[in-house]
Length: 352
Ligand SMILES: Cc1ncc(COP(=O)(O)O)c(C=O)c1O
Image (cartoon, rainbow, N blue to C red; front, side, top):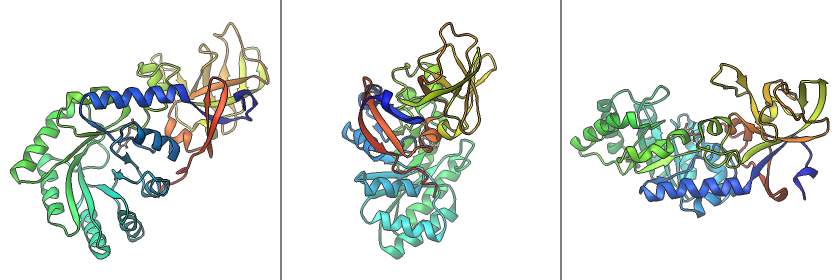
């Protein structure tokens, strides 16, 4: 099947760009002796997770337990990190059930979380790994001393094993915090086999924190507008695109596409000049994809010499690939204008 024969809107992954990204990020982490643990919340696709594992990923990261269940059921079950406080009876029952067949590590930032994990793991007689999360403005423990104090409680818990620390993100300016936390751990004799950093935007600076043992990157396989603008991804390396069709040209300088926030997500990118865009048209780089309602994309063509016509297809880079992929049931894996595979977005909607 040809890409031009697809009905739109359709989520595409360009296989040349995807493979290039999988290879270059894996190569970087291999060269620096840091384990790459891809965050699958971006693509939510078992087939892509297998490609990542085959290239040398040490395991995967899943933001939500439901994502981990889907990945494990799809055979991506060797070693899963869930960097999230898992609390509540329903989730704890599912977590320990998953831990029977999968090496699992979860994050904790409170005694409340730790007690729940320990009680559930002991009752089910399974082992759970736990890392202490450091606070960088979202969840996390507020100081190195508090992180080590929580680490001590984890080390004492039944059926839970202290595996180290994590932070989100992990930019070089955070090295002193990480070092200080590890020094507190060492003074108490606490183990830290995992020192986990994350975020695609800082990925190629990971070696500036030599303490990192592993890294969670999510968006690197598919890129997006921000990665393109920052220059970590060329337009070819921005492999995740939404194929759309021009359905209207209400004025000489405007085009309306058949995809809006329900195809791309509601994410907005602020350009350096202060303007906002919701996507980038690959074939018409001068076009400004300035706004979207649910099923309509508004494109300003005033800067374009050449303008798309009604009925024409265009490929759009999303601003934020993670919620964009979550809007779609299927990924069309394409190469050179041909559809090579259709993959389900297996963990779509797994928010629990
Ligand atoms: C805990 C955690 N780790 C890693 C990542 C991956 O970051 P990115 O999407 O920039 O690759 C995220 C992204 O939200 C995250 O929340």
